[in-house]
Length: 381
Image 1 (cartoon, rainbow, N blue to C red):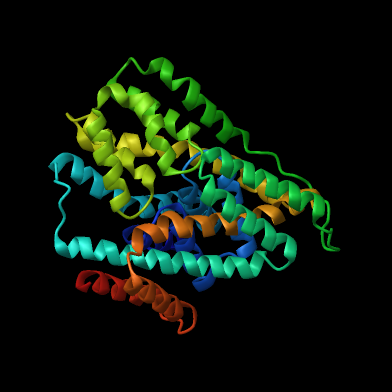
Image 2 (cartoon, one colour):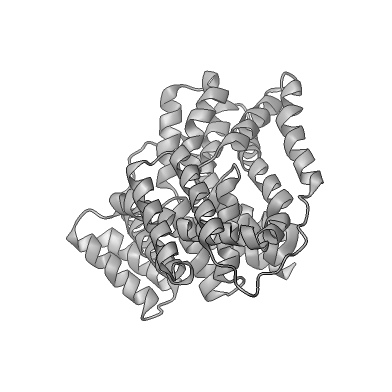
């Protein structure tokens, strides 16, 4: 129980400050759980990132869910999810029911700008740490560079998957087998979670005519089951599934708000669910959020253990070797755009980001003090 409580409040704190999207979230998680708490090492963490890249669903939330699963079992995974998602869930729910205008106070706007700048520091630190761990030779450095350039100039879901697959193939073919690679038994995926995944996907729609709540669950579950590439890809899918229930303007307001609040982009479902089920907005918000996150989490539960044993196979270890280097490039591309381009608007911002990086990496200033500093800077600037 103590582990579950600890997971909840640690992820809750991250949920309040995690601006910047999935790449930034991965940086926050690494700083908190790899560097500070040492709940897992860089290799295990990179394996979780690699798994999330090949499964549909919210990639950073899946990584957080898997960290909770590692540390506190299923209860810990659920606690991590609720902690990380709660702030954005509540903010977007309140936006839907209170009909808050897009105009924000100077204080809040300044804090958000400061935290976006802090996200630049966190992602830069994550890239630096993972680069040292996974780009130690010419091959891996080349893969990381190739990935960064490819995703900067061809930023599509297809190109991201293609680059990761190519990196896996390069690692599998060219990596030299080390002496500690041993053939281990591959664990099978956990069938009960796969059965649940497909049951919700194919059986719930049959009963969607029974009530608006069942239809709402089915629509958001379908979107969560088919989304590769994170929150920015979910909007067109949701427009296809629930587009007749909401205006295009409502979608755009919710999408803009989801980018302005911390936490996962999939929390957009909170705003949309409350807007669709306006006679019971909190129930609608809750159903939509649970439904859109559930498929990705069921797949993590199904494949996590088998992925870990699968990754220990000699050939697959080489593939993971290439993918880990590619993830460094993926983070680098995201660091350049959209994280830096949306947070840095001049020389002063560049200097603040460099200063924050030095404080975090060299001076080892605690993260919570840096958060306070950047909030104050954002308000003053």
